[in-house]
Structures are given as C-alpha cells and as structure tokens.
Length: 259
Image (cartoon, rainbow, N blue to C red):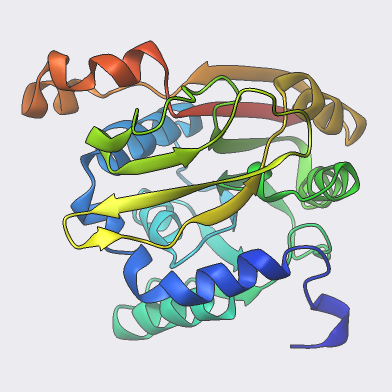
C-alpha cells in the first residue's frame, strides 16, 4: 500500500477486521438480522440501481458490491480499510467474476476514484474516530458523487437500547453506556452459533453531528429512517421474535443527495 493511501485514523479497525475477515462473510448466512433487517432496509432505501455507477465504501468482503452488481449496477467499485477484507473480496471475484474492482482505502483519505451516481456505506460513519475524520469521510464521499448523486448508509442507531444483552436474540452485542457524547468510543460484536466474533471499536455520533458533517460536505435532502424488519422476516420468524428490535432498532438508515 502506498504512503498516500495508508490509513491515518483507523488503525484499531484495521487490526480488528484483520482478525475476523474469515468469519465476517458468514454472518450474512448465520444471522437473520443481516438479511431480514439490514439488507432489506438498505436495499429499500437504495431503490433501483439499474445502470448506475456505484461506489461501495467500507465494502468488507464485498457482499453488497456483488449484490448491487447482480441487481443491475453498470459499475461497482468496492473500497475498505482492511487489506484482509479486500483480499477476501478479490478472491470471491476471481472465483466468480462479476467485473468488480476492489481497493484498500481509508474513506477519510480516499482520492476521487471515479464519477459515481451512488455511494453505499453499510457500517461506515460510526468508524469515524474524531469529528475531523467524520467530516473528511463525508467530504471524500461527496467528491466521488455526481451532482444529484446519492449517499445511502446504515449506521448504529444513536438511540439504540443500552441494556446489556438487549440485541442478543438477533446475534448482536452492543457495549454502550448512557453518558455517551459525540466521539465517545464504544463497541459492538456479532454473535453466532459458532460463538462471539471479536468486538469492533466504533464511535458515537448524534444525528445532529452526522447531519452537520453531511451538510458541510455539500449534501441536501438528508433523510433518516429506522432499519425495519421485512415482511419475509416476519413470516419466517414471527412478529414476537422481532418485537424488541422494533421498539429500539439496532441501526438506522441515512440517505442524502449531493447538491
């Protein structure tokens, strides 16, 4: 990796994701939450991608990059701060080519990689370690979007339940506390039948601070909505199973348009 694109802020995240790269992809199959809530909510917010040029930031092992290409995007470039995640994505692409490009980048220092109609970032903004980093992430995303292009992201809900074990039925553990302010470090983890996947360090940002960063970067029409359970998820597991998540969603979906 060149010095120009070496991660400046997220060395903790780089190390943590290196340790779970071989497990991360399996969470999409092992955790109904990721399919019936996260994926369903993200895709609903994105809408039709036919013919769109898409930049998938914090792409991990490329799950959403592949999905968006299969749903009709004309171009998909995936970037992630973790070399191990990108290696896993590239291996999948080599075994089943879809014409995807993957690059190791910190979104906060990312150059203009192309001209994109849509930027998607599933689990991104809560990795901003400082207010400066958050602002830079939003600015780099804006720089890669055409005027009128959209940014859609999924982030840990600032008003998520703080009680220990609250999200355990859905395969998540959130290690939060009541006195968090913008920039406070906390963590979350995926839990599967195979055990706890190492906790990941994230940072707390209020909706107001996130909106400030987006507005300063040139975004308008900022919209928030809780991640909701799909009709299929309710049919498969029942309304009662999802009740506590519906009362306090783990994540929220943000969408914004570049001026």
